Amino acid sequence: MRFDTIRIDHQAIFELVDSRSSVLDLGCGNGDLLYLLIKEKQVRGQGIDIDEKAIYRSVEKGLNVLHGDIDSGLSEYRDNSFDYVILNQSLQQVRRLETVLDHALRVGRNVIVGFPNFAYYKARLQLFFLGRAPVTSSLPYTWYESPNVHFFSIRDFLDYCRKRSIKVRRALYLGEGLRIPVFANLFATTGIFLISR
Image (cartoon, rainbow, N blue to C red):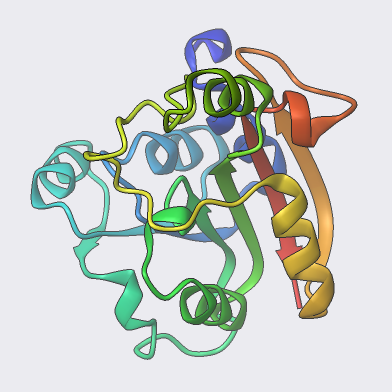
């Protein structure tokens, strides 16, 4: 598999996950990330998604994916059932963010969260100069078709973790096809965080 053909957020998450670990991917979509981790890192993986069409595409890849609404919690999973729980591009879409994150931190020894940065400078400029809800590479939806429920920035997420004593073990900031080393809240389109209790 050519690594340069893989989405940059998937590359970052791939870097954070240990080989032969167990992974629960919440909001796994069509299963591309889970498939990559199973094939290249030999993880034991399971996915959960609410979209039936996405589940069919995942199952076609040979993945173990369940139909479920992660907003309803993960009560069927014991504490520390997985080495990693992944919430990539899904945390901003859940209605009960705190409940979902609390369950993820309970079920997983580590949690990887990836989300679009709503404070990205192009989004700020569109709001300021055009007075319109922004549309960018990481926020590709118009306001009326967006699945996003929560609109937060990298700084907001870091503040949230600090206030709730959640440890941020690693943070990777991504731009349009590259890593962002400084001023991430302004220049990163996406934040990827490895967190734990």
